[in-house]
Amino acid sequence: MTTLSVADSIADPIASEELLAVLRRYWGYDSFRPLQREAMEAIQAGRDSVVVLPTGGGKSLCFQAPSLVSEGLALVVSPLISLMKDQVDALRTSGVAAAALHSALEPRERDRVLDDLRQRRLKLLYTSPERLVGENGEILQRQVEAAGLRFVAIDEAHCISHWGHDFRPEYRLLGRLRERFPGVSLHAFTATATPRVQRDIVTALGLRTPEVLVGSFDRPNLIYRVWRRGTVYRQVLEVVKRHANEAGIVYCISRREVEALAERLQSEGHRALPYHAGLADEVRHKNQDAFANERVDVIVATVAFGMGIDRSNVRYVVHAGAPKSVEHYQQEAGRAGRDGLEADCILIYSPADIMKWRRLFALSALDAGAAVSAEGRDTEAQDTQLRQIERYAASTTCRHKTLVEHFGQGFSSTDCGACDRCLGELEGVEDATVLAQKILSGVARVREGFGAGHVIDVLRGKRTDKVVDRGHHELSTFGLLVDYSIEELRGYIEQLGEQGLLHTEGDRYPILRLTGEGRRLLRGEITCALVRQKAPPAKDRANRHGTPQRKGPSDTAGWEGVDRELFEALRAERLAIARERGLPPYVIFHDSTLRDLARRKPGTAAELLEVRGVGARKAEELGDRFLSVIRVFGH
Image (cartoon, rainbow, N blue to C red; front, side):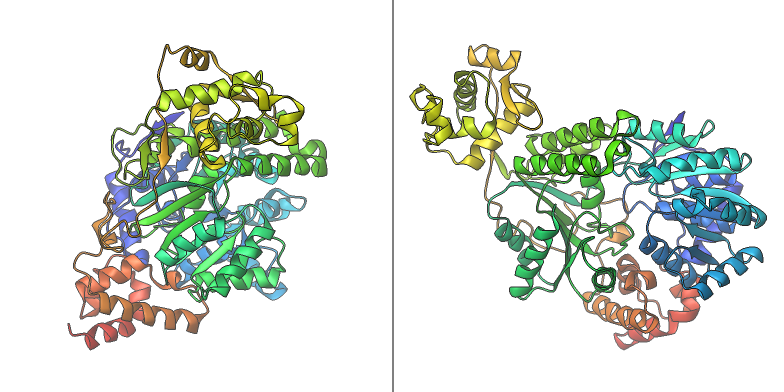
């Protein structure tokens, strides 16, 4: 399995020129983003591939552009109707012959798509794994084969793997495509996949000596923070107020939490709506569209929300509860700052979240029976993923480094300048070793037979029934840390766990035990460091929309030279066009394109085509309207 990084190259000059011509004509881009060229050329050469490009890295273009260079049909497997619809709308707006087959189509629409397929009028066809390899999948397989199937692109390919963060059994069946279409290349695309998941994808799909292209997992414009849970609503409200009138996503674990938080934000005058699987389909789609179409600023959601939402100007993502895994966190937090500008990613964490997920997983296993533990790996994978998110939350090192290294990549910087640790929002605890010894002694005195909650009660001197019944109020450690809050002590216990001084045993009733290193620390043979969270500054940057502290790879993503007043006028025009056409604004143009327009201020159609993100079709259909706005402000 060959793996290429951003620095590697398999360039074919002729193929590159053909692909660049397509990018310029349909999308208005005159250069490739990292690894796009290599991914496209793998398709052109008929080589199987696995492409891992983090959210915002332009992975969709990797299979869209090659479909226009040669004859034949590109088949795209996608998990969500909303994801298919948005991509097809965007392609058609750019002049690309694309369509989707899914259950939400009216019979007349479905017949039209099938007729276009038979007549070979389509370059890209989107469909779901269920429709392609499900009970009646053979019918569609014959139809795409007759239409000149050239390659298959599988989006959100991490769903194939038992070790992925969103395993879906129907995705596993896509391995049948290798036998069904032996001469057609298969290409797996995902935003989040560890090396283990990448290997599982290759095996499950039967890929033949694939190119494995893995982009950088670092998102330098994102500022990562972990806050210990206090009053969740106040913590969320602090972020929402800091980003007044800006787009944001708030994730909760349960539907009840979603409803309550959305209602409270609304009562405070914020444009917020809920989104979860328990809502009626009509309401859920309406709320999602309201956010995508910029009619509301905040969406409060379970993790069901976000896939396929391409709104580029999300300025913050708050997790009001821990996600299921580091992979989930990377993908969900990565929905912020897709325009390359600075964005906040805040995890409000409590160990109770992990227990909540374990209960939910246990209930799911009971409901689904043996199917949930396919090959005996799902439960093991879930438990591993929960421990990894616990370690991330408790980490006292750079959060960018922690995330990047989780995905098997190196991170050389000693100061990212974009996380709570590197921004100095965490401070060292004085006499940390002594404090750690007191906590470890508390665990030892209860004979390593109780969980964190009971140990904390003893250390804080709380005479609970459980403490008194076991005589633990008579221990020398009783009340030893009476001045510390529950949240503080939980945080220190997590840090001691991360440092290998404590470990937890048991799932349903976890208990704390000392490790060998923990016993050495108790004896004074080694030392340790602990940190605590400082109150975040009211405003941690002089210019919220300024250049990120760690500048992203594309200077067109910044604000330098941009006429702000013109930019807002262009946004208003884009919104008007989007509503006329019933499309999300980002399908018309991304914010990065509007910034480039407000920076360059083109005055002619020819100059308009020099703007990044303006292709020939959009220039022809929409150019006059945007040029008119620019003229109003003076060329």
